Length: 297
Image (cartoon, rainbow, N blue to C red):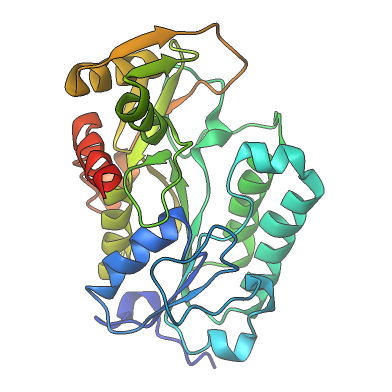
């Protein structure tokens, strides 16, 4: 019989392991959870450095042994190929890192609560129509989207205590900041060159403030919401709308560039709002504020 704590009886101070716990999302989430829970550990190869966890275990998450996994009540998986560009450059690596290792991980789990980073990018092409978790597709343009969609299907069949979190484009400050993400990049350009470049201004994106992401994790850890797929975003907006709001807020100029091939999609949050109590508060301006504060340091 399983020795794990059932989802409905998860204790108030669960032991937590974050795979990818020193990366962009992981480092912000680690500091957030350390303020709330006694036992929070990280596993990360530190390919982008480590600015938060002196006790990080520096190994591939695929090599973390099953007997050590049993020490934890909650597993948060953020490790793997983290974006389309990386997966296009290394498609076979994306299959291995995002899919094969994911299957190996769930085979080693023993009913722990598993939260993992899925992606809203699987919704590409829907444009301004805000879709929910029931949207289906069989058309994929890259291995990143395919691997994320496949993981969601595999988890639904093989691991009943999994929470697939379809993040919008995550933006905001972090100890291990990614300056390439949309609002992060725009704020950086506004500060450094006084001008925001707009590419593909017509396309729409769901944006997830990293503060709202951390709040969503808190909600999953503290309530008895059913496992499954959850869309998570703070708001939907076009690239031009976001750029103009940042330019107005920071009093800088914008510069429009020719369009390139890219994603265009929106999504809704109704399921997360209803089942988790997710009520996002991040706006373009609040995200800009925390990024400006970060860049000042």
